[in-house]
Length: 75
Image 1: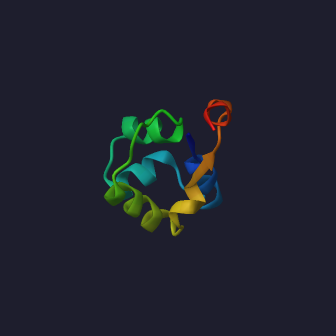
Image 2: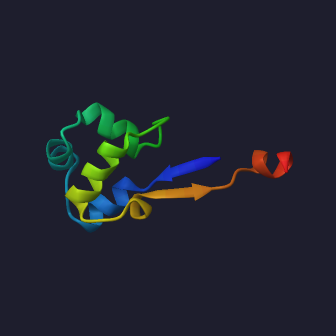
Image 3: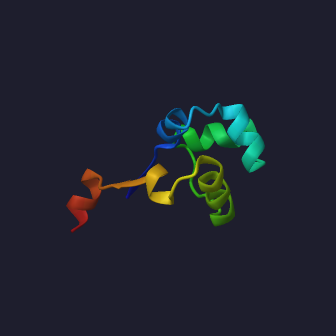
């Protein structure tokens, strides 16, 4: 299972910098970078909600599910 984080796309649409979003959401730049670069293993719903509020979007606007080849082999 691969969850793709399209946070950079939504930030570009809203013309919001990483620093501005980090300040609005109250997370570190390092943690925001982990999210943006698809390195995060999890995200708290409270953080996701804060990101959506700051960017005026829905969770589905920044999160995407993509099947991997490994999943096809297991089915």
